[in-house]
Image (cartoon, rainbow, N blue to C red; front, top):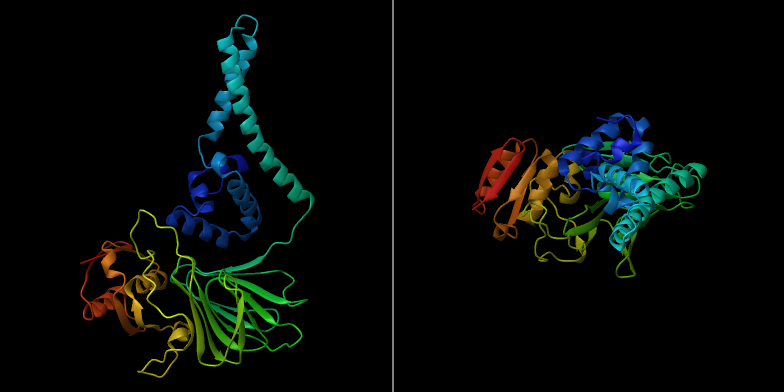
Length: 358
């Protein structure tokens, strides 16, 4: 999969899709490659940054061919300068030179980034990643434990625990934090920052989800909401729910489509499963998929992550129907069949893609 040199990799369409988050299959493929080849992670991270910095130029996989063609034209123009000095030639020559300057600017930015970063080595963040349908337990250097839900990422500095204890979360995680009054534990998400001393809590902050929430099991946590500039304290068996920024709508009408903002926001009690009196918000840590009065669009996102499949919702009118369910080892077909009894819908499966329709 990996090319022998950086230039080939920078024009690899699959790698570009991974860097720009444009194709789910390429994202899964390269994430798995990095997981299995950690020695390549630093190199790929540098190349990904270059692609992001020069997105408009590098995103075109024909860039190398354009540069070569441009060079040939400039070389030819140099040979014919004496015999072709008409205004028309000068106009075209100026266009070539301007185009060359633009391409050189792109290349120069990439080269400057590579040289400056190699001259000044920077600390790499430690990262823990789970794929769809995968969970992972982590013990941090301070003795705290974290359980990552499917399709989640946790980042921290290599110096974690020396001067502070801060992590960044994308996705969902259950934390059991070791008590240390001198070094508060902090969890940062796109919507909020959570500060604790020693406690047990759950944070859900998936990119593209309509809702983000923090649920407290024991102890206390302090939430700082980034967009509202206010601080909130939670007590045991409370959660805070807020609407995240809606994702940009794409041509694909799927499980990732935003639902209407019908859910309550603010401080709410955690939900209790009537069957076994467990807390719904952390039931996933016990390998139980549970939800109460949850919009169908959000339920489908859960199923995508839980089973590692893709679900396409053909009829957006179904997205806001509310469903309640509790499942342990059932297949995705069993779950969907059970939900059909509540509010009817149809589905078909082809390989790893399930399509929902009326």
